[in-house]
Amino acid sequence: MNAEKIMSKRNGHHVNETTLHVIGDDHVGTAYDTPMREDAHDLSDEEKMDKIAANFREIMNTLGLDLTDDSLNGTPRRVAKMFVKEIFKGLHPDNKPASTLFDNKYQYKQMLIEKSIPVQSTCEHHFLPIYGKAHIAYISSGKVIGLSKLNRIVDYYARRPQVQERLTIQIANELKKVLKTNDVAVYIDAKHMCVSARGIEHHGCSTVTSEYGGKFLNENTRAEFLAAIGS
Image 1 (cartoon, rainbow, N blue to C red):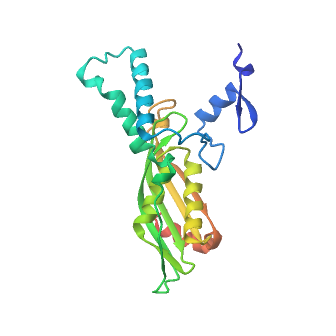
Image 2: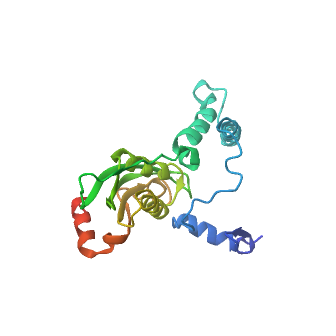
Image 3: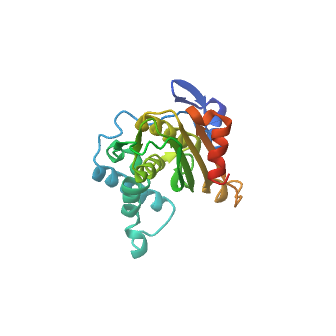
């Protein structure tokens, strides 16, 4: 059957197979929320790991690998644990960091910037690593948050199959919600191994995304933030 005639249904619309390949190769996101099924959390972590290990063992068998070899025999289980407990742990809402706010007793009214937060994520189109740095800032509306919680918010949304544009917006939206202010800024500079390890195979390039709200839409405020992070 011609690929143009193979149809897939996504977000209530029919999308042909060729378009889906273009979306993946061009690293295009299609929604602000991570696409999840309604039954995504019905299985326990152990049940998920059992299913993933069995399926990954089949992939390795299909590739012709000898799983009786001591080096390979435990790989399916290791991969399953890595997926569920580590690199995709941000898919489960139970792992969302609790964020406690405190009164801004010092009456600090300028921007607070947390620079160079490590970003470790995974491209949802090829399941290859995305890695880089996030810089975030906010201006208090009367409340402040512990600095480590800013890092944890970034990590939570990064630890899932992602598109960098969506990751940037998700972090910004969560900061607005938690901090009860629109005065937030998020800037991410990251490298994508789906660009360097396959396809064009270009090394050294990075992708920059940003999201600004409230006072950071003002050119001078935004310029102060960008100067502080060295951009």
